[in-house]
Length: 570
Image (cartoon, rainbow, N blue to C red; front, side, top):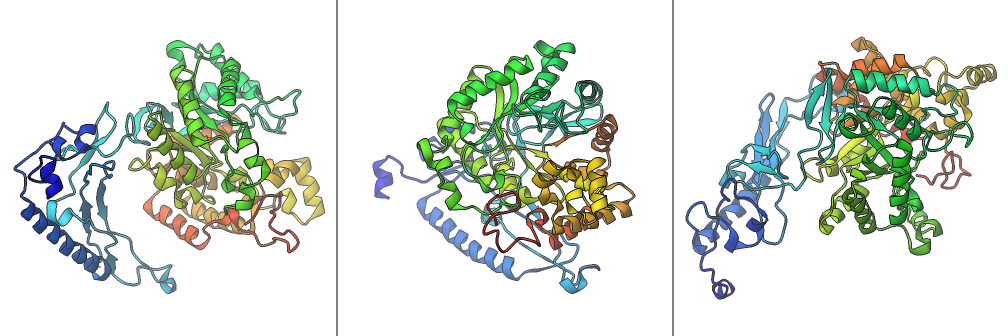
């Protein structure tokens, strides 16, 4: 009380901020709060705090003991509040407690007991109200509540993944909090004009871009300075993908001006110790030169500048401190810091070289460290993270990435790749195993002489071995049954399922021929989503076999911490 009197404040205001007057000043302290009603006396405030304490106990009691009849919907809400020292807390939107618990003994039948469990409750909702509608303020940088006016998210142009428009039936979504809008289907270019046996050539990829971008609402092309893969340095060189894309844009008048706005180009700098402020600028300039354009829409790290267990192609999943302290990562001053990274990307933005930036093959730590560092420095946070995602690789939904990327948290878009798991989720390897998995010598020879895809090649087959683990193949067989029962192909099931996940902004799909591309466009322009029944069957399989590509039944006793391609495991 004495401190308050000395500061000239005799009463503590407890109020809501008027609608339309939310600003940074509203969290500076009690003096700056706009009152909407009379200030409350300290004695009344103490009574309110006592009620809050009682309410906390009531919430705990109800959420741990309450049984709700089946079919009922319980809406539990919380309001947002602001303190002088902390950023506004995000709102807890109304939550419908409709999750049914099922016993293992009755997993294939109806729910074994007809009840609903209330999982959470708003601490202040019962006293001060809640459940008001929160909407995005167009042209501003926050969600706002029409009643309180409190802003809860500093995220740029809007919430990630909102559908901004449809073009020829193809939905286009906001990427992170940026003004970059990308189609739900993006063109993956890793193998374009590569040395692969079935790689699309220049004429093919020109046709791909004509069909997808000029005629069917696709606007995103994802590439990298390292593409194509594989390359031989002669007929297929690193950077050739960017060259071919640039030649197509020039031929179609899309490299500059208004035409350039029809295409969203995402490229990547080679990761690891290559990521330095100097190289970020130099490598970006190289990509722009090869593409023949003035700017990239999105510039990403191909893999983190630091050690991260999930950034490789093997089965490494656990953090290994010995790997992190290796001379490669800790020598010469260690990896580029998040501060250096954010400032280097901002410099490119200020120069008009890129519109936004992001990361690839990273995790929740890397994502959040980048966004929080950028905000602390007052520079542009990343708008995207790109990662492996499919029916048999759902780790990004469950390892913190989805939570971090959410529009209610860091508001970052997610670009998924490998939705077909290197071709395994097309079903073409189900009748006869991939060459490296076949025990029949004649079949091995036949597969390698007439490969069905990358899994029949020695190089790709070894690199992508995790998609063929015993657990992965078991899951693929189960998903194939779901697709068959639904009367659709496994490919269609896999792509349409990815499209419906709340994490996903866009799906980067590679194609070897025009027929494959036409199928993808068809699946991504279907108006009817997969049914709740199908989605639940997929979830039930997932619950039985949760991380199949990171499982293995044949790790050798003599391997001592190394996986099949030399990566650190587990």
